[in-house]
Length: 286
Image 1 (cartoon, rainbow, N blue to C red):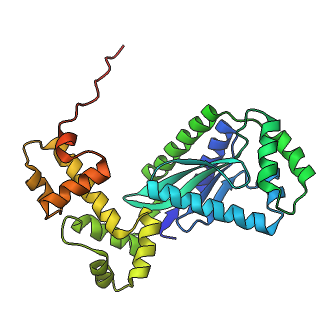
Image 2 (image 1 turned 180 degrees about the horizontal axis):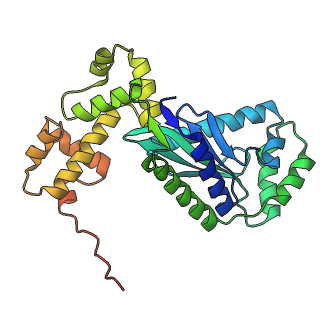
Image 3 (image 1 turned 45 degrees about the horizontal axis):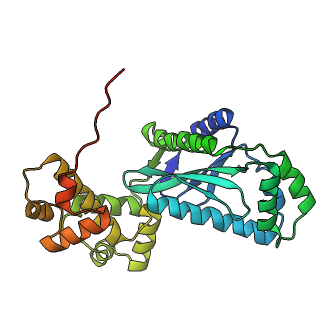
C-alpha cells in the first residue's frame, strides 16, 4: 500500500454516505484489498452467493477488474457484477497516482423484483448455493432506480475528492511509486521512456510496468504521452500565439508531424481544429 488512510475519520464519512443513500460503501487500497466498509457486514444476497467458493472467487475477481477499469479511465465506473447486481467505483487520486477506490454495491437495479430475480437466477444457476434462500433475499432487496444510482455515484465521486482535499488520505512520499511519479512530472517533456526510468530507479521493466498499471491504469509510455497531450491542449487554449512547432517542442514531441498524428489520435481532432474550437456559451445568471 502506497498511501496513508485516516481510518477513524474515513469510517465516519462512510457512515454519513450510508445514512444519505442507504447503500453499503467500501474502501479499497491500491492493491484492491478492503480497508473499511459500512455497514461492515455484506448484504444477505451477497453472503448467500459467496457461500460457493467459486462464486466468492468470481466476486473478488469482478471487484479487482472493476478497480482496474476505473484506474485506467480515471473516472467513475458503474457496471453490473457477475451475479447481476449493480455496483459503482470511484478512483481516489492523489497527484497523478490512483491510491485507492471507493466502491458501493450491491444494488438491485431492475424495474421489478421478478425481472431482477430472473436475471440473478440466470447469472448464478451454475453455483452451488441455496437458490430458494437467494430468491427470498433478492425479493427483499429495495429496487433502486438508475437516476438514484447515478446521483449516489456522483456523491461517492465527490467523497473521493474530499478525502484528498481534507487530507484523510495521503501518499507515502518515500514510496517508490510516488518517487517515480515525481520524476515523471519533472521530466515528461524530455526524452523519457520506460528503460530510462527502470535504470534510474534500479528496478526491472516488469516491476515498473506493474507500478504504472496500478498507479495510472496504463503503461509508462501511454502515461507520458497523455501528460504531453494534456500540456499541448493547455498551451493551445492559453497561448494561441505559439506555433504548432513551438508547442510540439515544448511538450516533448521533437517530431512535428508525429505530434500532429498523436494529438489527432488521442483527442479526436487535429491541433489546429482544437485551437479554433468555439467555447461553450456562458449561461446568464437568473
